[in-house]
Amino acid sequence: MSEQILVTGGTGYIGSHTTIALLEAGFEVVVLDNLCNSSVESLNRIERICGKRPKFYQADIRDRKALDQIFAEYQFNSVLHFAGLKAVGESVQKPLDYYENNISGSITLFQAMAQANVFNLVFSSSATVYGAPTEMPIREDFPTAAPTSPYGSTKLTIEVILKDLAKSDQQWSIALLRYFNPVGAHQSGLIGEAPNGLPNNLLPYISQVAIGKLHELSVFGGDYSTPDGTGVRDYIHVQDLADGHLCALKAISEDAGVRVWNLGTGIGYSVLEIIHAFEQASGRPVPYKLIDRRSGDIAECWADPRKAASELGWTAKRGLIEMMADSWRWQENNPLGYAS
Ligand code: NAD
Ligand code: UFG
Image (tube, rainbow, N blue to C red; front, side, top):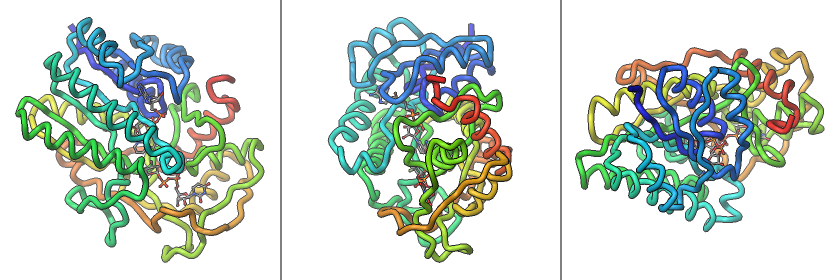
């Protein structure tokens, strides 16, 4: 019998790509999502891509009764926990929503797991937990820092909770995956990132400018101490990220305790480099203007990915142009996201 995996947030951007990787690797996948930031149409697309459809429950991770029912129905080997609110700016406006959804929701999920004797967990953390390191690239042993947003605080708090949990009970086997900047889409162009309203992140914004939905990109700050003055980030293809989860699943099935891995490429690109690469990949112009820095942004952030390479046997394979081309294919084929 194939291993059963619960994927919370599995209709979202990263969860849907990881669900495909899991189904293709032969896992039986159960997706739980309350659809607050995703569409059930992603499940149809997943089925079109890999000929298999995950079981789906529209449920909230804060709903203990719903969780208990799902855990009673299956014998999960592991949980991949993607569900959460993720908009940095919105978290500043609505901190209680973020603490309640992300932290209370995660605690409820971990309680339901423990009761069901499921102790293998992969958690979606973020490079935001490092704050503004003075040195690059960022290694996992760098100190975590006071996050600059309630969103970041939720990620760091959940990491702390999971470390305490693993200390209290050695059955827990936990991977904290600190993602850098996920971009791109499945090469089929059938699934991708579908933000509600005005995009906060660079790639969805650029894509919407290129397709003509938005007029021009505002580049936040041209006066950083970086080679061209704009912010530098470690952009990683979402399919590489998905593959990283499969490697983490294998690792946690072999050893207990909590381990942390950066999932990044180890290469930093500036905003201007991204704009030019996107123009090259799409053949479309991306008009932009330089404006003031965005509050809370850091100058540069890229990963040292060697720990994941040596311990998980995982490295990102897809380069910049492929990331841009795949983002564009998704945007061009689905100008209205999953409503297209
Ligand atoms: P996403 O919004 O596309 O996916 C998250 C999913 O969780 C959505 O489908 C949403 O409907 C669901 N969800 C939210 N709250 C829920 C709840 N209470 N109960 C059930 N479902 C709920 O986001 P994503 O980009 O796929 O991110 C996945 C995870 O990775 C998140 O935890 C996010 O914080 C983390 N992460 C994302 C990035 C990024 O830049 N995309 C970077 C670092 C970490
Ligand atoms: N940027 C612009 N204009 C825009 C949007 C972004 O110039 O309209 C710039 C930013 O200033 C930054 C870069 O593009 O230099 C990337 O910005 P994003 O908003 O795409 O990503 P961030 O690095 O700010 O944050 C992302 C996620 C966070 C996560 C963090 C680290 O949004 O959730 O990566 O993993 F915490």
